[in-house]
Amino acid sequence: MKLQQVLSQVRKAVDDYNMIQEGDKIAIGISGGKDSLCLLYALQALQRFYPKKFSLVAVTVDLGFDNLNLEKIKELCKSLNVEYEIVSTEIAKIVFQDRKESNPCSLCAKMRKGALNEAMKRHGCNKIAYAHHKDDVVETMLMSLIYEGRLHTFAPVTYLDRMDLTVIRPLMYMKEADVIGFVRKYQVPVVKSPCPADGHTKREYVGNLLQQLNQENPGVKERMFTAIVNSKIVGYSTNPK
Image (tube, rainbow, N blue to C red):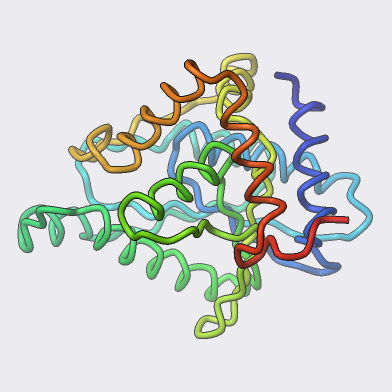
């Protein structure tokens, strides 16, 4: 997928849900994975011509694994002229060694978001862009249905009143397959996650289940996404303009 095609889908999401305002300073949480790097490229490109002026800062929360190399990410941010900060933490030690969590993802996510939000406030950001794509929207809804017994997924725009920060999700109209196509075409320097739980989570299980459903019922993911957008789930109750 070409950058122009990515931009088209990102701008539609930004416009449909009024994600960006004049003067926003937006942080991008960079994990090093394909989704967050695709988002970095997209917002940096959008910044050049979008009528509402905004600034960007990229932030990576280093969980403390020894084998995480972020040099190529540093070079990428420098080439895109985007400020980049790496926040060093001991989250991996706390989760896997001290606490020995049987379900490490929940605590890790909470601590990672806390470190990321603190970094954003230091930089004076009022918004953070998460790299959740269309597949993530549907997977999260299925996870809530299966494990919590409720119909819920994250909203395109969420205001965090305790932090006075707004979360936006500009990739929400992009399929994961399109993200993969983009990073391959542009040889984006994806960094593999060093987390030992990677590939063994409930989200991976639900993702595989959804993939099977889509193979057996072509188009089911798209129909489920359309149902969410047209639903009364928080954040989707008003159809986009």
